[in-house]
Image (cartoon, rainbow, N blue to C red):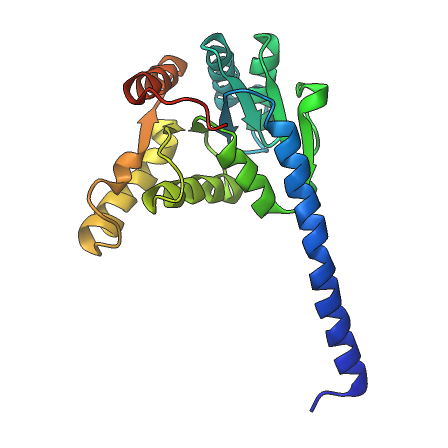
Length: 229
């Protein structure tokens, strides 16, 4: 049986939940207003723990520079590691460098290579992920942890279920991603039939910056697609 104090506490929780809607709406409005003006961009995902002297940091920087050279800007999660490398490459190439930051108890802080007028802070992961999908012309996924996998599989799911239009999802690093793709193909697809034949083709696996750009250019030449906004 619920006590009076328990009932009061429960009512306060429900009230706070209701008011949170306005904070969520505010994050969407702020994100839409800022990001609707950035032009076509490619999102780069990966670990916040990758150090500047590691090979995937350096490769990410090269990829971001190439992306800018081919007419796109770069969006990252705005933090350190792979995110910093992506923003740094875009910044050094003189292109658009966007950071979608989130408040976390560890790891996350703004990197210094984000354009000052394109640094957006979020409290809610789900709002931030909407912005990544809505304002990106492609995803480049570097080695990363749970957050990177979350962003990767959300994009795959949205395309698989026709909730968004198809766009390139590029995994970089055969040594890192080939085991995951093998498990998806052999276990999810062939053994248990939990995905359809061809679903795995929604992602492509490469190792170099030139291969990333080739996929992006070929996709948009073939489908004659315009930016998402």
